[in-house]
Image 1 (cartoon, one colour):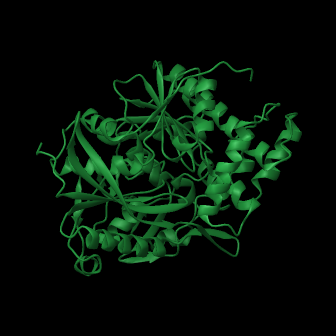
Image 2 (image 1 turned 90 degrees about the vertical axis):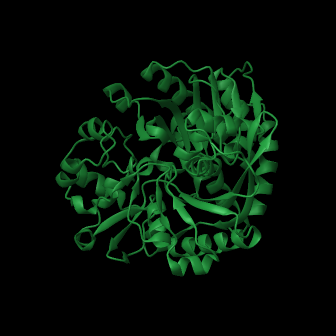
Image 3 (image 1 turned 45 degrees about the horizontal axis):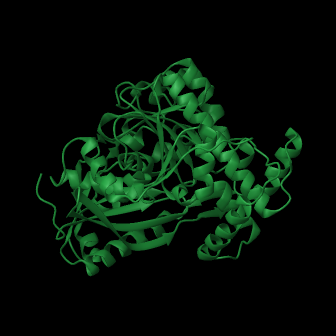
Length: 485
């Protein structure tokens, strides 16, 4: 491990379901050890595009913004960037025929997934799938989406998940990073390799499955035309390209007695384990076993997350900018915190809340149907969402600990949700456990830490990376309070 200096930087391309960022990370010596300093270079929106009755990602615009962000980073810090890593949300993909992208990648919230679930379950039922891939049943998992492609699948040479697709455009390398591949439903949960027999059973040709690589693998260098656009040749390094895998790397925990909540558009709630949990109890409780960095298992449940707040704000004021919505949310959270009357707690994972649209109306309808107090103002709706998310987080933590036989003494809440003090305190209150909130940029931090380790700048163990995360994070601890509901 070489000493930390400020001369060398690493670039994280961090793509979320609503926005993307290019963030630079510099290692520096600091009291207590090495510190990772983050510098935001660019931020850009990432909204779905509806074409007739279909929902897609504007992946070409994302790629253009990635190139612009890397070029801006090189201009600001000429000659300092050692490598770049790309992470994004899971499950969505592009189909390639040679060098050509076939069609526009679908958004995981598109309605076509229902037909895919029926097609797959006609060949392998839910229990049979879980025994092989260990995944929570989610109708948008990649294997369900692939089942809807029809003749297009016969034209394709490969499918590439979104980070791997961008990596292909950057370098020409065709690979699948393992943590994200684990979300497709086509990876064997025990071996971490493609389940070729399952793919064949579902009509997915094995030739479509790219070679697997682990986080830290050097994927390749920028192709000449990309290097010209960026202003310098760079190396692309595979990171935990599923954003939650990177976020869990940056959980500032010590030991193993922790649960994590990676809270953004989705709330990913779970444990880090050595081995998957493939019991019927885990399947029936809605848990998933996804790959983590260094071969760890992320045993977790997907909870709807801050999507409920962001989509509600979009409904209340569709013309507002992101900054205006952020300001209004701060005001509404303050109003919501002051509410003392009964608060509706609804099932945030009801399929009614999955699609874009009028979330507040759906919440009111759910509450009427289930005898809960009906929110009649934006502030009451926000309080109901926060309490319902906290209740779902509490159930997931308790269920995960029980099913895995894993003791939990603290919860680490990372990502954008760590800024929501009402949510953090409600989660502590409902779990009866302390909640440590932060870092906000856990995904980018985990991305950068894996790159720094690949460059020989940090220790080899995952715990070495977490030590840097602890030294680099300003966190807030929320202690549980007694509550009446």
